[in-house]
Image (cartoon, rainbow, N blue to C red):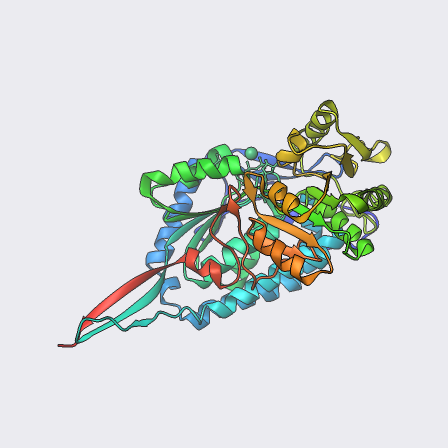
Length: 497
Ligand code: NAI
Ligand code: MG
């Protein structure tokens, strides 16, 4: 495929007749023989045909993962050998960085500058960080009060893990899921999102090249209601890790009941981003812009409720509006693009639907609120949109939009804004902008969210735990916190009498 303006690093991957799934170390067709198309959201054109997994394919993958967990070389590898495989994979990701960045941008629509600077290097970093944990999964010796007993704990893998990921950061979500699971010695069936299966499958090729034993990682592309649901309900899967909507998170939990699988859920949000007048306002406006428009607003932590203290409301919202107007919309693959399309026709309809609801309920877009025309009309583009004249009860102030749409809300004082910020079914993240150190810490304590950013936003690191309060989810990813999700503790009692 010829793509103008950039050096084309795509190899033969996209030229395949259809891109296969990875089961038990083999690249195979779907049991049904069906395929589905994945689309370039910048143009609406078909990028590739991908085999469509369903319950029969999930079942085969679970059998392969179980076999790899119980026998063969994987359970016999030393922790150091597991760590080395993860390091090798990180090296291979770096060696193929430009190809992965282009694939990610073509499949998801996100600006290539971010795929290059963020998605791909952070994916390699994630595998490297967890490679280090493979050799550090320690148990404890327990000083029990029963004489002549030696009691200790072992940390063992959970077993066969199903991982269902979304489309907003396809490669990074695969890394967040795979890296800790593999470091802890589990085997995996990964189901990428139907909108963006390409980079996970290319990563599968690199996993094979790195030398992971067959069946340790199985990758089954397909739709949520079929392949995803089959994985979530499978009686021989020990754990499900899910990132996606709160609605589907609840279905995953229901499906887990059959065999009481362990579940971790990273779900939606409606995160408050709060600007006090004593903040460095120029900096805060840039921060608010990034908080809402990074990745076209398709970030679970997106700062979609912008609370601004009344005395600086006009200045901040005016600054944000001007900056939003200047953002360069364009095809993801264009190196100058700052804001790409949203991921799919469905998402386009969802986001523009919310914009219409906002207008109907009486809010006013200070900028945006429409789709751009001209040469962007074929893609799934939405103008960056700043809503003014909003109150807390409006639909656009309560529900997750997951697009480039922010609601601006004025407030008077600290207690009021904390209460309003916390008045949400969600509790994923929150931002606070202030130069008053006491206010910063008080707000960090008062806000009911799993992550608080002070004078910054959307910071992530493999070493820092991440996850939600309330209906934003269960469990934590990253840092050593995630190791609890991928290991189980065995207590051993030895009588020394
Ligand atoms: P979704 O929750 O339906 O999809 C996420 C993943 O779950 C995909 O891999 C999908 O195939 C799978 N899935 C869907 N239904 C399933 C089921 N019944 N059983 C098992 N797996 C299933 O999200 P969707 O429809 O793509 O987006 C809808 C909304 O969800 C977005 O507008 C946004 O509000 C939210 N969302 C939140 C994300 C986050 O990072 N927290 C990521 C993606 C979406
Ligand atoms: Mg869905």
